[in-house]
Structure formats: structure tokens, C-alpha cells
Length: 251
Image (cartoon, rainbow, N blue to C red):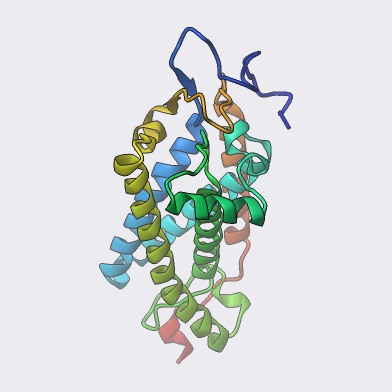
């Protein structure tokens, strides 16, 4: 299904944007911005947490940004450009299993966008990052700092959420490591230059591609509006949350 506001070339449903070029535009700028920003924020969140309680507010800011970015990506998954939309890359279980089995034999189909296994990883990382970000709003560091929504729940529940928040980080880290391994396999063994594609947004045409559709517009202005709205909503929620005493003041 093609969004009416999205510009897709006349031949995009079959072979890409033009017969005069060997590349097609796959990843729009908002998707690429989301991808690399999430990487940077994930690293920054880890560093600010490791540096101790004095950097807690910076850790929170990283969390805010992650929540906004992931919520944006979810919205963009419904109204974004062709390869960004969930309906165009999430496959049914049978197709996914067949792709996984054929991958072990080196006979898998080529997907211009996310392949079926990559789609699963997208969902895992989006879900994990969103849960990680939201739980961080209710946590405390058991020393002095508390999350902005800490006052909504009991201290006992906050401690449980804090434990989940800490443990979930390692699960996300494991998923990221698996994602990196998969990327390297595609990059160096399958000769699919997906790293450069996430910087440039373009891929080479392939006659055997399943979804070789080219986009002509990143719709960046629409994405910016969505980001601003989501940022304002989160800011409103945090601003109107009841003020919480620091953790030490509770005892």
C-alpha cells in the first residue's frame, strides 16, 4: 500500500526509480537519522550511567530522546516512506521460517529493504528500547536521584522497575550484538553493502530483489513535525508529573 503523499517513481513497483541509474533510493533521511541517533544515544546512556549519580540528569536526557525517537519510528512505520512502513517488511511466520532455512543454505531471496529476519530484529529493538526508556522514568538510583514519574508509584514498585531497567539493558545489548553480527555477515560474506546504504540511503539494483521499490522523497518535513509533537507530549507529561522527593529523603 502506497501513501498518497509519498512520491514513488512510475516504475518503482518493479525495478526502481530509473533505468538510467544502477542505484535506487531505499532509506529515507528520517530512518537514517533515527538509526544512527539511537546508536549514539544508547552509547551515551551507558556512559552517563557508568559515570555515577552526578550524571543522572544526562542519563535521563538520553532516555527522553530515546523515547521520542522510538515513538517516532513506530509512527513512521505506519505513515513513512515505502521501506520504512511495517506492512512492507514484516512477513508472516511461514515466510520468515522459509527465509531462515534458505539462509543456512545460502539460497535466500534478496530483499531491498529489511529481510524477514531483519524485520524481527527491528521489532525486538524497538520494543526493548521503548520499554527501557519508559521504565527509566520510574526508576531511582537508590542513592539520591529518582526518575521524573517516580511519585506516581510506590518505592517498592520503583525498585522492581529499576531492576527490570538494569537487566533489560543487557538483553538489548545482546540483541544489538546479534544485529551487528548479522550486518557483518551480509556486508562481507553476502556482499550486500547495507552499512553504506544506511549512510547514503541508496542501494544497487538487483534483478532478483523481492521489493525493489525506489522512493523519491524522504518527507523530512513531515518527520520533523512528528518529532516536535512527540517531544512536546513527553515534555508535558514530565512537566505535569507530581514532584518527587529524592530517594534519600524517603528514608
